[in-house]
Image 1 (cartoon, rainbow, N blue to C red):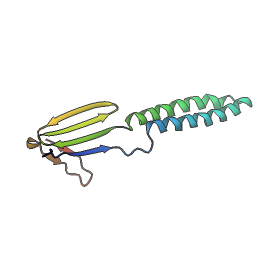
Image 2 (cartoon, rainbow, N blue to C red; image 1 turned 135 degrees about the vertical axis):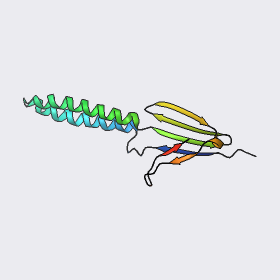
Image 3 (tube, rainbow, N blue to C red; image 1 turned 180 degrees about the vertical axis):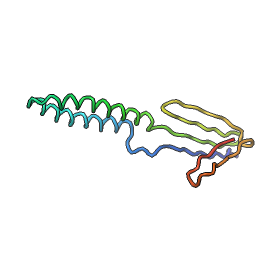
Image 4 (cartoon, rainbow, N blue to C red; image 1 turned 90 degrees about the vertical axis):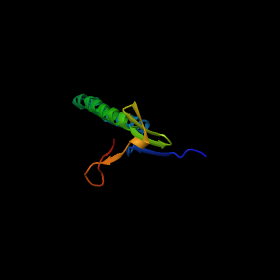
Length: 118
């Protein structure tokens, strides 16, 4: 008889995948630099001086967003093993527990309370 397994994957609800973030940023750069180039051709160089730091800060924010877009947790319950896997910023951690000696504790805090395994 096959072993009964249950698996839950908990992940963020991200609007954009990392590749989509890169495409959106490339489009933003093209538009912003085209506007800055238009002003530069008319002798207003100050717009380009503000556009470059703006794009650099937006790039930093999008890199941080994309780095955590694929974060998730996976809980696998099989006969004789409770596996908890966490991926945070590309770093993977696993914990193997005995399901007979593990209990689930829900903190007081309402419906969205955190769950702890002891």
